[in-house]
Image (tube, rainbow, N blue to C red):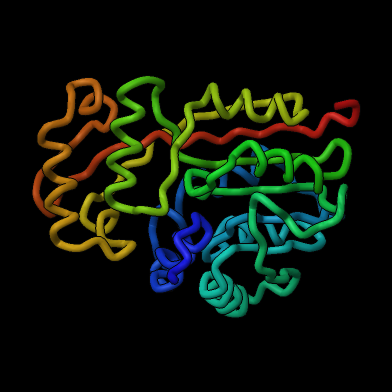
Amino acid sequence: MPDSSPKATVQSQFGPNAAKYATSRVHAKGASLARLVELLQPQAEWTALDVAAAAGHTAFILAPHVAHMLVTDITPEMLDVAAGLAAEKGIDNVAFEIADAQNLPFADERFNLVTCRIAPHHFADVSRFVREAWRVLKPGGLFAVVDNIVPPGPTGDFVNEFEILRDPSHVRCLTLGEWCDELAAAGFGAITTEIAPKRMAFAPWAVRLGATPETVIALHGMLAHAPQAVLEFLQLQGEGDDLTFELSEAIVIGRKNPAA
């Protein structure tokens, strides 16, 4: 009997499409990559962990600034792609390991920095993931999440339904307030946030994970009948193959509070 668990759904969606994430503009060249380095100010003696790393772009921009970077993902094919990119780039202070973001197989207080970029909307239990990040961080260590966020209420619900239609492994984008609450509940302090818009080209976004032509038509149909508040949030431009829309991407950083 096929495994229909959330973990298996993610693996089935991303395994066959892993190579696309090596060249995806959103993942490989997003503005949040350079901004993470500016905000985190990684130190040469740090040991860092990148969770749900996909093709490794976040890990690779941080690796030159730290002593060691551990690159993890739940999908073996993604790690194969990441290892190939690391070799191409000549990055030699990285290691690769299969790991579930919600059950990290690492000792308490091992890392100075934990990052996760454009992935938590696939996690079935975000609270557990945040607690796991807190657990494996050293006292005073930094946790940085980059992910799409949605407005609260019906507009956010519509955007999440739109994402699920395109990608069945999508669970839910949180609101910025929910992210801040999650970090605070886990024991993180000194929480800082930034939000930036990112414009998405509809066509490559729709088919990156193998959406059928019927699904693409259904996605267009959702947009055609979207409420005005959703249209204002997505800021649609163009039409047909030239259609673009806007998502909101948040950077949320917290420091492990030793007293928590």
